[in-house]
Image 1 (cartoon, rainbow, N blue to C red):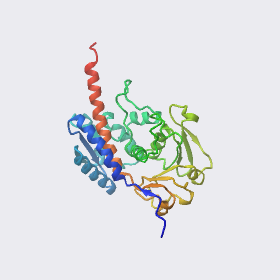
Image 2: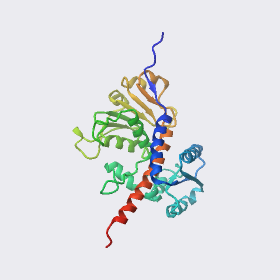
Image 3: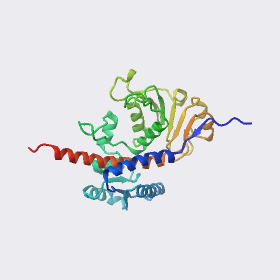
Image 4: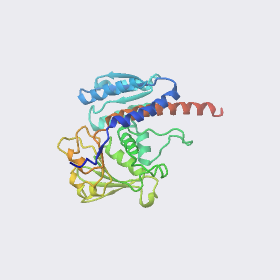
Length: 320
């Protein structure tokens, strides 16, 4: 009789269901249906699928959703119009559209108070500096980018975060590799995990960097250390968790380098792990897309709650 497999495969749908239950609780406090507007300005089939699934999930969970299809030359004006529309609570844009630099510009066009994707400068700056609140009273939490936050929520579900430790230090003692250093997912994810206390090896095409908060987590935010000459051969055997998001069908994480019992998470649309990963890993999460959309809706609820907190604070403030 063959040995039973020791690797547990965890699907994102179950974790997303738990996150959406949390979203429902938040919606009840708002007592209204927030309006999310998505902008589609490209013919990319993956963007169309993502837009359709976002709309379906939003409507099923008590939100209003409008998909606005525009020519890419008209997109900036369309975003500005939505910024000024008081009925619109949240805005998302289905990238890529033009390419890196112009798309980064468009991310800054979205009103910070409607940026459910957490891509505007205010939120990105807070994330890297490990600033978790928007106000001095620490009532309004800052918004985090959806895909990196989805990975964080998956790690919490898998109990990689240690709830016994203080909030903000709950990855202390964990060593994590993130394969991908894109500005949209890989680098923000490495920063988030390091700010929560992990030692994070960030692997890009050409090099490795180590993100950490110093010995004993003495630093308030992470710092970055170059590791010249290092590659997967050096970092994978050290890592409790390996998270990969290389957007190419030819790349596969070398299974023989994985630490026995590692937790492996794939956030690429391609499968970065071969089926043999189940012979080495203790837990394998093959995709995270459903969690990303759940986190997007969670961000929208949080933004609406932040607006209500700010409005009450203004009402309570003494008149000049």
